[in-house]
Image (cartoon, rainbow, N blue to C red; front, side):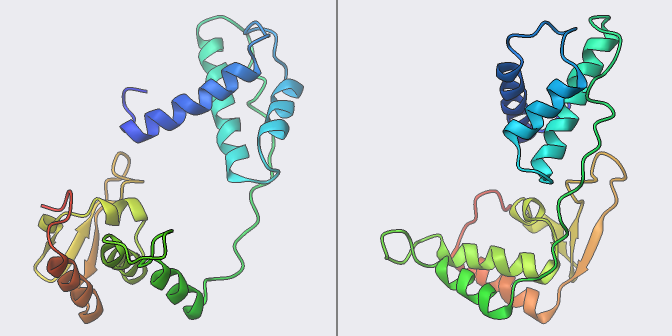
Length: 188
């Protein structure tokens, strides 16, 4: 995993550990397609994104084994999965505000110190339509000349295309709230 980001490496490690435990009684040349399907059915909800993720991990594992001569085929390669059902509804304005307001109160029922920043985070997600990781990693240096310039983390290693988001009055107001809260870990 050396080319992957540390968080992704941890996630892959955890997923491959789960696969290793499930296939511990097998030699690498033994598992068949039915064994892979059984693993997916036992460890994932049907039509879930995780089922697709684990199928991809199995394909990678058996490709690695085939490339090194441990087996001649890849039993997970042609497992057809139905994708997760499409989202057919969006959060209503009322639901959005309930979630946003709840960020101010901790499990103990008291106001949290992180609540105002979490609200800013949520507002920036909504106003910019960017991925949470990209907003969480946003730096002040990316905000200049009336735009926020983001290289989406999902495509930074492939296309590397930048997204330029004009700073609207609503975005400017959120950014001012962020500045008023104080220093933000990571934002330099």
